[in-house]
Length: 106
Picture 1: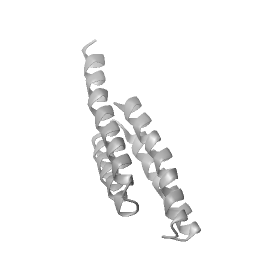
Picture 2: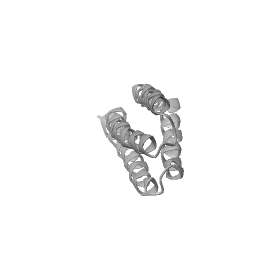
Picture 3: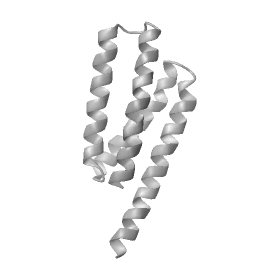
Picture 4: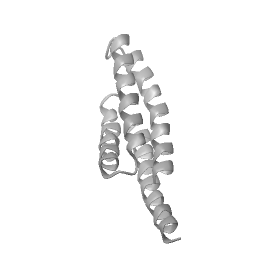
């Protein structure tokens, strides 16, 4: 679970970089605010990724997915991209648990 989940969360950090560019380009926030929020999001996601496969980290990762879906308020096209990343996380969560079960049987 940990490895697959960390890869999915790492890809989401890359996605958030492009979201930060969109937010900065639309002048919704000041540049320094965008950079600060992006850095806080990176710290949060890296902390969650380091906590995987603990229960609190999995729950926090699902909350991050809700936050990613909420980005459609910033730009409507982000809903489609956000759904893709939520699907990626759900698949990583499911397959990671499946891999863990197989590894624990041996």
